[in-house]
Structures are given as structure tokens and as C-alpha cells.
Length: 273
Image 1 (cartoon, helix red, strand yellow):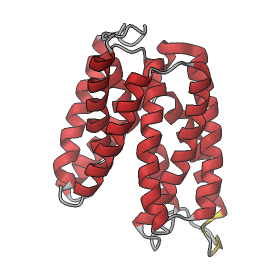
Image 2: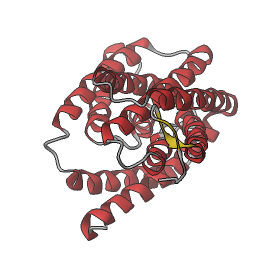
Image 3: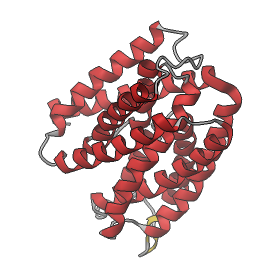
Image 4: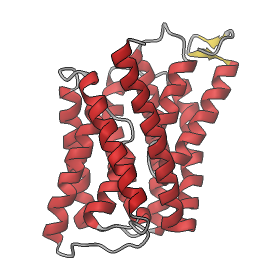
């Protein structure tokens, strides 16, 4: 926690912590807009900066509020510049919502210590695979042209990644991107716009749950959402301007951060740190 006097009862952080969180929200919005994974920055920042007497659901709810509006901002920029394929997007979004709901419902029954090492191994495989295929995702070359073929594959991707988002969460946007690139042959940029909208759906579902229970630090969430939206707007514009190669580089950086975080979590689980 960043020490200092709290600003108010309705904003339970110090001035220094607030500045720290606003910067983190802006950077997270930028990263999330380009390739997903902004939660790797924003959620740990909230854990560090918010006093320990604030319960976990309020931290998660505040994080989702900021992330939702940042993703909304990025999606708006992408949709203005890149055309989406509804035969892919609709089943992807429906699958993501359903998968996220099921994952969230089952999350209390599945020990995190079982999932984290498995996800870590999967992320390492994805990173190595991406490095070994330097041309993958640099050109938008869809492998499936029939709507039915695209629909069931995108629905399956939505269900799998949505389920992961509901049951664990870190790097959801990156998993959407790599599966759309690897399975459907999309370019990184085209995959990102679809990933953004699918991730927006899973964020909305989670935000609704936290909102119904009043588990959001509202003023802090609004302030962070404004910075997250700004970062998302800038990140989406940079991605659409610089193309697939730029998105691929950011993707590999985010995967590296995800590997470090999951490795740390795995070590902490087995050492009791």
C-alpha cells in the first residue's frame, strides 16, 4: 500500500496512491487496446495502492469498471477503422459471454494452484510458437471463407477464452488474439478488434455482477476509467496506424509480462511465499 492520509471516506486512497493508480490505468488502457493484457498492470496496482481493509470484491469491481470503459474506447476506434465480420463476431461474443458465466460459476470449486501452472505452460508455448513463426499474423489471410465454418470455430474460441476469463483471467485479451490469429488466420490487427469486443462482453458481465452488489469504489473507478479510456483511445489509434508488425511486438512483450506474473504466482503457491 502507498502510505499517506486518505483523501476521503468515498476515496480510500492517499493522494500519492491516486496519482499512481491513474498512471497505471492509463498505461493499462494503452496496452489493453493494442493487444490485451492491461489487467496485468492495473489489477496489481490496485492491490498495492488500496488499503488492506478494503475487501477484494471492491478491488476487482473497481478494476472491471475502469477496464470496461477503456475497452469501450478502444473498440470504438477500431470499429471506425477496421471492418468486422459478423459471422465471426456474433458467435465469438455469445460464446465468450456463456464461457465467462460458466467459468465464474465454477471458479470457487477449482483450486487456483491447479490452474496457474497449466496456464503458465500454455503461455510459454504460445510465446515460443509466435517467436518461431515470425510471419504469423503479419498478413490478414483468413483460412475459412464459409460462414458456417467461421461461426463454429469462433464460437469455440469464445467459449474457451471466456471460460478462462471467468475462472482465472490474466491475459484474456492476448488469448483471444493468438487463437484468432493461429486458428482463423487473422492478422494481429484484425484479431485485436474482435478480441476487444469479445473482451468488452466478458468485462460487462463481470461489471454487472459487481455493480449489483455495490462492490465498486465509485469515485476511484470513474477517475481510473477516464485515464483508461484515454490510454485505450491512444493505443487503438497507434495500433491501427502502425499495423500488424507493431501489434505483434507488443503482443510478445505482454506475453513476457504474463509469463513472469504466472511464474511468480506458481512459485509463491509452492513455497508459501
